[in-house]
Structures are given as C-alpha cells and as structure tokens.
Length: 331
Image 1 (cartoon, rainbow, N blue to C red):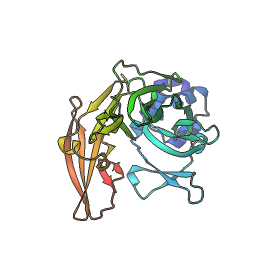
Image 2 (cartoon, rainbow, N blue to C red; image 1 turned 60 degrees about the vertical axis):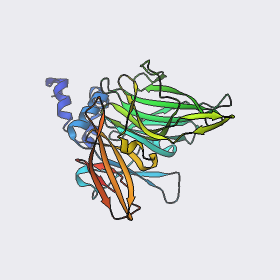
Image 3 (cartoon, helix red, strand yellow; image 1 turned 60 degrees about the horizontal axis):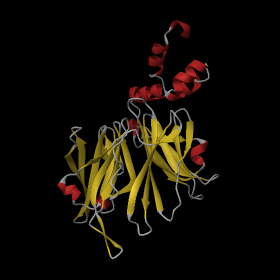
Image 4 (cartoon, rainbow, N blue to C red; image 1 turned 30 degrees about the horizontal axis):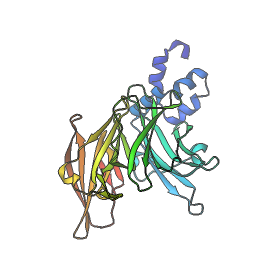
C-alpha cells in the first residue's frame, strides 16, 4: 500500500503518530527507518505533536553515581509520571548532567566511567538512539584550562552542534584567552567556529547554566575587569552579562541587561526558556518572603528585556524550577 503513497505524504501521516508506533515502524523497512531516524522528521514530529515533556533526574539512594529519569507530560503535570530508560551511553557517565534539549534531542555531559574521557551524549529518548562525543580537555604548559560545554541545533540545517569553550588562565586565575571549538553531528568532526568574529573577551567568566532558544545559545556570565599591581591581580565588582551564540552563523554576541539587573549579583539571577523566548529571573528576599521578578527578552535585534510580572512566595527557601505550558512557573 505504501507504494501508492508518496514519501512526503507518508511522512506527514507519521508526524501524527505516537512515539511508540514510530519505534515499531522502524523495523518495517529500511526506507521507513531512515525517514524516522532523520533529523528533519524528528524536528517536525516534535513540533507537530506539541508534546514537550519535562525530563527529571533523581539520584539513586544507594549508588550516588547512579541516576534514574522520568518524563512528565505537560498536559498532566505533575500527576502523570513515566519511568524512562536512558541509552547505555548515558548510564556510563559518572554523574551525568543534562546540558540542554532542542528539536527532540537531549544532550548529557559527564565523565565516561570506562575511558575516563569527558563525553557529551546526544540522544533521542523517543527512539532510544544515542551518539557519544569525546570532548577535548587540555592539560599542559603550566596553564589552567576549564571547559564549558553547550548544545543546540542549527535551525537552518537541523545540524546538532556541541560547543566547547576552553578558558586558558595562569595559576593566579588571570584569564588569558578563550578557545572555542564546535562539533557538528552531521560531519562528526571538531572545528573552529564558522564566524571570524572573536570569541568572548578574556574578562568574561562563564557559568555552566545555558539555554537554547529559537536558534541561539545563551550563557549567564560575569564581566570582570582585572588589573595587576605588584604581580597580584585585582578584580573589580563583577557585572552580569548574557553571552549569545548564533547556532547558524556561529557568531558571538553580548546582551546588556536592564540597569536593575546589571547591578545585581549573578547569584541572584538565573535564565530559562519560556514561550520560545529567553527569560531572566531575579530573586530577592523581602520580610522573610522570596520575591521573583520575571524578565523576558523581546523584539529580537536590538534585544531588550521587558518585566512580565512578580511572584511572591511565603518561604525564604523557595526556588523557581522553570516554566511549563503557557509560561506557568513552578517552584
């Protein structure tokens, strides 16, 4: 029967099917397997299905290096929990950390317990496929090296990419420069960024948290001006800044925060994704209550932030875990 239906129509029909059916259909023929495994189909299926489950990890009570994972469908949050079996490559990571997700793909990062290499594992949890990528980690020359790894998908080519920032500093912790490498899952190679613009300034200090939003990776970072007096570094008060990376052009940029946020400590800020936009959450403690100010990045370029609303919680220990559905917050 499939011989009478074009491949394009078959693909449109399959986009409407649940994941469990797609897993079974992979064994029907090589043609269907190739279609279902394709990155373009994965992207289209995740968008058309509207199913954006929340992935949660839980530490094992006995084995502290082992974690279990569950999926919570958005429509039934938080009442319906689905146990999840992750690919073997993820289980081989020591203390795996979820970097980010995009286009139906998740990227985990950690140390492989067998090879002791730092590894990023890109996987499609729906069809249980995974690819492990060894992330270069330098140790030489008497300098100090620190890696920051990010993950996103190019919106034009649907090419999953891993970005590796390497901060090179002296033993005094004075940053000398950044080295940036990009791994393309389509070509399976590490290379320099496509853009010729320089990487972030040496005064930028990255934090591990980043988000992928609408074709861009965003990192929350500090900008620290360093001066050296009598051989000793002197640091100014750090100012928070957001560094962006266009996953298509691989060009870096910096986003200026509103004045009220730019004067805050980075410890009081965090970033999330909501409604396909970047969100910055500012947290304060007032009269024993926790107060969260929610800011959203709008208007593309030039980029500007708009304050959406304020959330008051009658507990000084409350934290915002993220956003679900149409911008709802959960804590």
